[in-house]
Image (cartoon, rainbow, N blue to C red):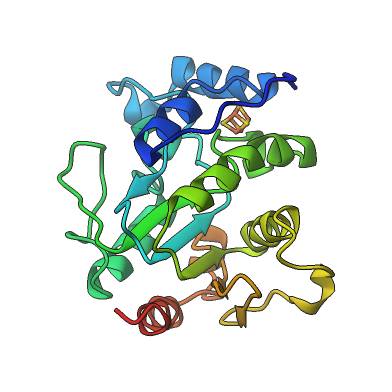
Length: 235
Ligand code: SF4
């Protein structure tokens, strides 16, 4: 890990530029670049993004969707969260029906997608081998989440996609001295917590193929999460 702590960025746009140029995790930067060099046969004509993936959405958002990390051939290929893989194919139709996304399909950074009242990010910004960032890598990347949550001035509701995202959000609240013991907050699909910071966390199973192909997470279950987020954010 590099010892540097980046400066406080004044805007979300500037923060995204800082994220894209981050080199704090050599293992992940090497992996992302290597995946981009080798590519998957189905995407052999693509020029992979191959770097940290910037966040995406509406800077005035009242709702945040917080994921785990980019997929090697999804976001690491397209350069936009949940774009170009099975998780995104499950997520964006729900966001469209819930009124957060302008279209149900997400294929590339230039597909015309616009988000309203929603910002999407993740606790890890570089694709990890086997979808498993190390504890140290998640800790390295938490500096970006801290700055992002400071810059999302209207934020009310955080939809945590999976246990690791929920843990990452709670760790942020603890770093900000907003919560003490984290044991009061238990992950379960559809759980809801109003935190002392007045932000509300909703937890959901992650829309990974492992969960959606097995029926652990169904479309109605996922719709209910984002409809509840709308309600809590008073949209
Ligand atoms: S995972 Fe986060 S901290 Fe690590 S190199 Fe990528 S952007 Fe930087």
